[in-house]
Image 1 (cartoon, rainbow, N blue to C red):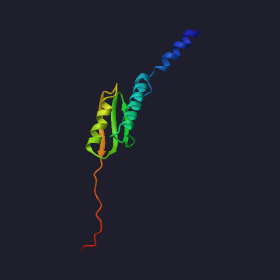
Image 2: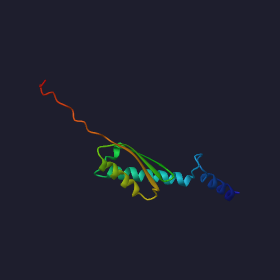
Image 3: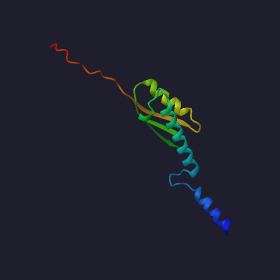
Image 4: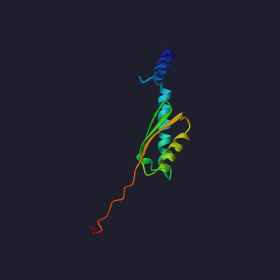
Length: 107
């Protein structure tokens, strides 16, 4: 009887979570999220704290804002380099810099 109960717990533990993802897929997505976010934060070029990361079935979605196109491309490259990533959707917005005009006293 103990083996049957343990087997039932194992099967229940592997059931999906209602989003048509298995527990294994959910755990894989969580691991990918952690690896991508850590890689972004540890990169000296990219400001990883300003970039959001979501993962669904191995598809990474990046959003947030960065200072330039180089940062945007670098963030995507970093995400693509993480094991388990199937594809990357880069929704990062590049901030545009508008210098403020100073009052020079001229009419």
